[in-house]
Image 1 (cartoon, rainbow, N blue to C red):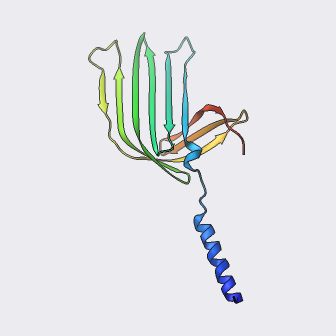
Image 2: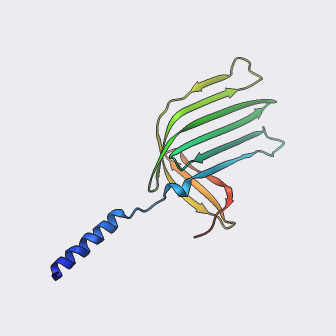
Image 3: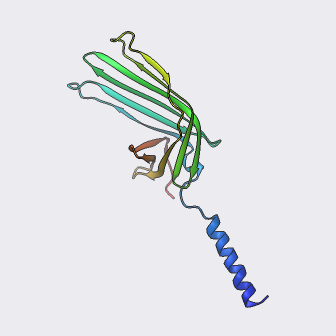
Length: 161
């Protein structure tokens, strides 16, 4: 084997290594249950609360359940969202393709104002990242043109690498 052949072989190996190298996350980084939410404890202000839970499965499917409550003058308006579909992760880009996107709005103080609808099934793409805080809790952050939201891993602590 000549020096030229060895150089060519090393070049092909290097190109193959670079082409096979992918920065970003893999699906195993996001598989699991992720939540965010809280409730207002201010007794002087109208009560409100919100909870959102994402679950990503290793088979490429996801579910989202969201609940938002706002109370004013003793009446609580509730928004509920049930969504599921498929996801695709490409490096730090996450695309959610919903197959169901159901919404319900209710307010017992406004009879007849309750609505249910199956919302438009439009794919949504996010920049995605994971973080680990100083207590070892894992977070998944999703960002798009509407802003960024971070969700805490339900499983608790994850190991720092």
